[in-house]
Length: 230
View 1 (cartoon, rainbow, N blue to C red):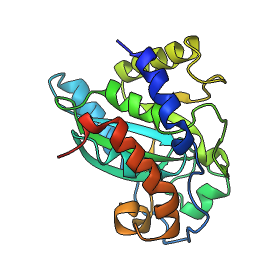
View 2: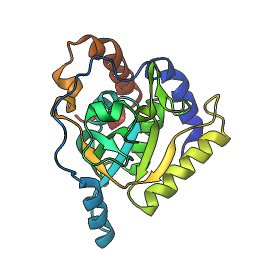
View 3: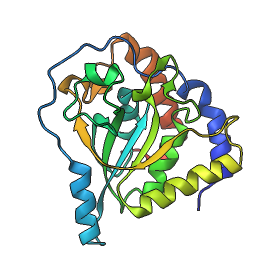
View 4: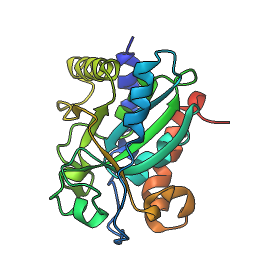
């Protein structure tokens, strides 16, 4: 069952930090992706063939994928996480192409997790508590469809849970405005350039990491201390 009351209290506590600007404007273009790695699609197919499969995948867009990655990779049960692009129409897009808004892709993180240690519902809770899902095509000072709030579900269960959670949050008026998060079937995923991967851990001394990502991570670790890796 979705704990909307506790969620509302937590949102009030963390909103001031988590709703800051998303990706910084310091990114530079790198080499274009050359391969479409549909990791999540393959895992979802495996799970459909074997209901007892314990490895699952979630694909979330919540603004800057640097920030999303830094948060979710700290959760116990998350086996791997990779930044990339989903939901668009152009194959193997580069970061530059995604940023100009012509590909239709959102910045996402594809999360591979052990569902015996962490449930999809837990990931949804973290997802909605660590960004502002009410702003359309923007997060903080970053604007564009690539920064939209999105859940790309991999199976019927994920769809049902995401839609239920969104409905309950709206009905409880947890946020002052309606949730704008789009909930759509997963269709594609393209990994982002190498320099985007594990960004916060490798560039923690940079200004954007210190002043935007680090406060989010610290607040997240306080709110979700019982769900962190040890």
